[in-house]
Length: 111
Length: 120
Image (tube, each protein chain N blue to C red):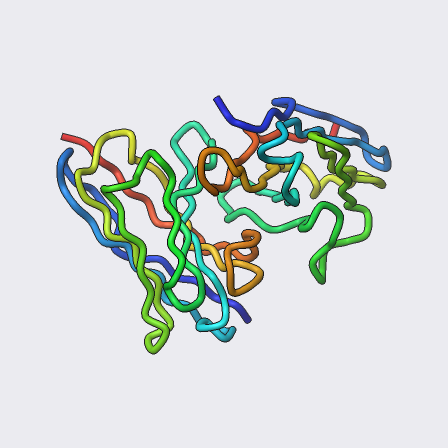
């Protein structure tokens, strides 16, 4: 059971906008930055969004992140077939001692 | 180009030990915190440990505290994870991960991973 809650699956058609949610608590999302990772099959996870809404260089602006209270969201606009992957949210948890926690992952299918 | 190459994984019996290494290149290793993260056979990600730039700040997941030790050698651009008293629950793909800053902040760049299998 993951500390952060994500929907196990999401889907959309090419060109569509999809959002993936990540729910936590006051000791994690509520008091720390949220980061998002994309994991393609057989590949290492790749940083997609850091500090809630910042994109590393090279990440298309179709990807955006937001945070409100104890929840965060990843939005993907103009969905493309290559976006089909697993997406994970992560943040620090302050209780009882600092450690990183992950969501269970959301498998995005492009129909 | 940032590169992180893990080594030292493999098969080990329960109760045994293994030492993972991570060779870093393409960035100023001594300026960044580093992490170990593992992915279990079911696909879930679990943070294992972190070390800041000068080894002055170490952190461990409760599941490995007292059994695993993280360390680094800035002169050799290398990160290590000494694992002991291994159980089948430690079977996973272990990733070496570069942080975005000198103190543990966020997981930035990931290596390709090294499998560790604990089985009798």
